[in-house]
Image (tube, rainbow, N blue to C red; front, side):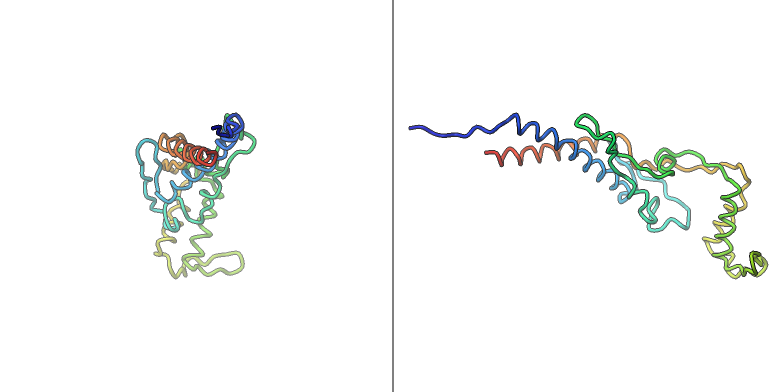
Length: 192
């Protein structure tokens, strides 16, 4: 009695899994980093919740007004290889939010907040001049915030708290490993 057992090409299967590992890693890492916005905090070995903001323009939550920062998380294709996967955020404010730090008040920033204050407080405008004495809503929370920002001295420092959304995470690495082994097991079952 003879049995014909077809032996799978294990070398080909291994090469396919190696090639898929980088894609699995990139997809899982991007998903993990984007989830930090939903959870409002970052997880390495433990969850670290973000400090809540007092900014009345925050939108639906701290660090999530229009989703631009979360949406900027992407794979760096120039560094994409079987040995290296880099996930990055390409906005100009990614680093200050992720690491925390200080920003310097500039005349341009002050001008921006005066204009926003005038809009929110409904200050009448004649030509290019505002009639400040006739403001209708100067106590609106957004108007108060804008006025306080506009009144800061040029050169003053504003502290931006660390709200990490990207970086090394033991939890993320475990999730990537699990996703890879789940796919590897599924492919193994398909082979037999």
